[in-house]
Image (cartoon, rainbow, N blue to C red):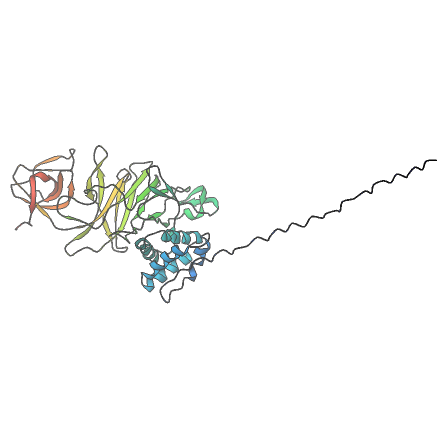
Length: 401
């Protein structure tokens, strides 16, 4: 019989189980944030009091920014530097940081002037916080908010219950507005409707250190301040007829928007030392009948011996767009060429004709600069003031008698 070989099944090969190697995720490399760049001060002046300001600046100051602040502190005397640190040390952190941030992007002149201004800041004065953007006309505009972070609550103001007023805005206070050359400051009315006194330090040029101040009426909705307005012609810059005006620097601009044209705005500017025989004066621009620049009038300022500042008041209509020019006024005189020269009540065509100014070669004392075609003078004939046509007079020495 045939022998049948047994069927042998092929062995089953089971592949080995491969356990994947664990994925090793490298630990993130933590790079410590660089320590804020320190600033230095003159010997004997500690900057430790500025820690609150540093804490409010994300990342602190860059090395370049810190050097700018250091240079400014080193450029002043020890007393001024210490007063600056003391002032910033008691300001709220955000306000102190605002000052340092402005200084860090300023020119050396502006940073030094900021130190000098802040060193003289009256206790309780605030520094407004601003946001910067480029406006439609290409100007770098810094918009400031006058509202604070205090809780909103009802309060009584002048005996009247007022709802929704922030506590820090219910009392009269002073707020400093810091802007550099080339910037424009715009300040809007606060939610409380109460305007604080505003001060605007000039940080560059011949007027560096001068701090104009204004008090606004409740009707004012906004105020714009430009420390270095561009595009001014030579007359706007201070090249004025009459011979009695010496500009102390370039003018600056105020523009007040208001719900009322008759509400009053008070200006306050410091007295500035001028040359022997000269008198300090502030001129403000007036507009022509077509709305353009017509010239400058002397501000009707009163000197306050207590503050050593000059103050004057104008309507909101007059300061809707106004240049202010600090000047030194020096003695000047003109004579009329003939008896046909007339004297008027005003500088434009609406001035009343007072008739002939006086006999030929009468000497008139120049009181204010030329506006349009007329010069503001004192007449020895009438014993009063008026405007005389510049074309009918010429420079003269003082009267002989």
